[in-house]
Image (cartoon, rainbow, N blue to C red; front, top):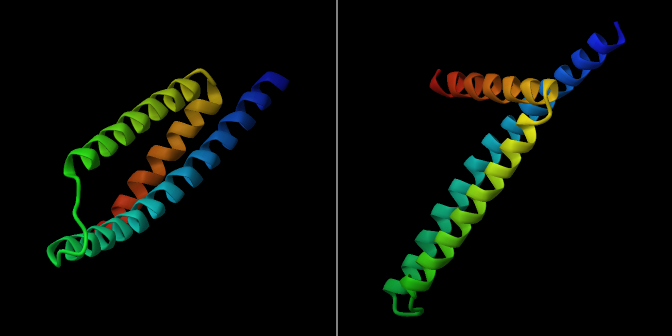
Length: 108
């Protein structure tokens, strides 16, 4: 009986943590999108006004490096969650459930 309770608690905690993480990631994505658009518009204005020059080659290199780092980090996190068993299953269920619930709320 203790094994079932232990797996149940891990699954429930994983679900709660997954739901919380999905909510925080969704909220921060929206905030980062707004900040990124404002920053791009401001830098574009400065470039058009001739105040600064933008090295697009170096900018592309930086974006590529960041994308590669994010892909590696996501792969590492995913493999860690998969190895955690019931906690990982609960986390995935919480993440997926919250993501779908937030998407449905945004559509309404």
